[in-house]
Length: 431
Image (cartoon, rainbow, N blue to C red; front, top):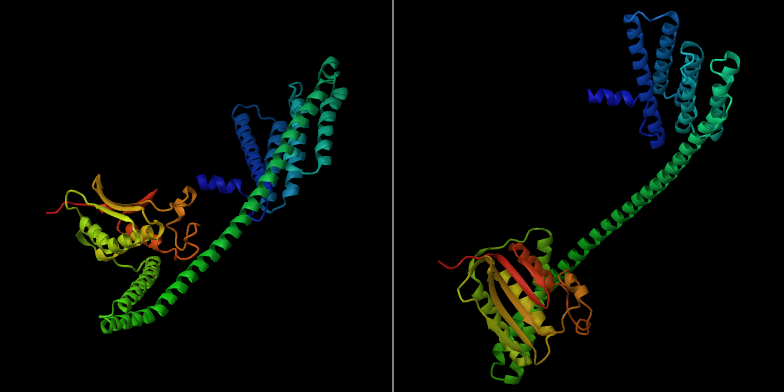
């Protein structure tokens, strides 16, 4: 039923029409249907009450014919002709009722609706003011000939001011509404254009991001083999000069730097796998205390050599977490490398294990140069580096991005204040 009513209201509506025209068509359809129902109702009512005479019969039949014609013209997309016939029909109906069928019932006041209808259905001002003038004339002039009302009722200009005043008020609101609708339409058009521009830029950025990832992955693959070969040669060279301490120390430095470079390449490859959602974790129960201990033992000599106090505070119980040991240790290594890089001699770095509400946290704190508050949320973005003197010399901008994504793959999260808080998935005590 609802769909039928909707189709009836939308007779003659075309999607290509402006919204204003569609609104006019729908309103005229509804008005015509109401008039048809009115004609049919009073035709039956007057018939059954034995008050249907020839005048009423002709009036109601003509009303039905003309308003039915309006619906037909709307369907044929003859919108202007339909509106003209509607205006003429309403005027003729009011004139006939006021001066013949229902004389003396002050139906003349209904002439006001004609110029008001014109404000909605027509755009030209000459039509509006012409119909206003016609309505005023139709109100006053017939009484001069038919003497329907006493002269003192129609001799004043009250109705003139009433008609003109109401017309001007409605016209003011109509003009204001149209102006606002134009502004809204213009704003919507601008928003749509802006959306298209943003969508285009977003596609460009997505393509650029994919290109960037592929570029770095290709570099990682291309450099992977040479680094492996260099690492092998350094190992062989170390065996030959084992007795010469100075040469061995230089080789040890080369070996450490090669391992760092290898770690960067691994990070790039793993981030690409995360992007493609092909990185698989080998999760098992493991002791988070032991993960922290291994990280501590790995970096303790480096911190000691640089003159940085390095402390480890384990949790009292041996807490187990469900995680991939290799990737979790690499994430910890990246954070500690960051602390080592940005903490000056005489500073402090610490690892602390905490357990709160069944979540294990590994807190890494340092007294490094810190990160400005405005940059805190961005330090985990890929290839982002917070501006500082140290970053001008080195840094890939992928270490902390790797940390966050690894921890998130474990169902945890990383918080950064003046310390890192990698939270693991729910932990369980041993046994």
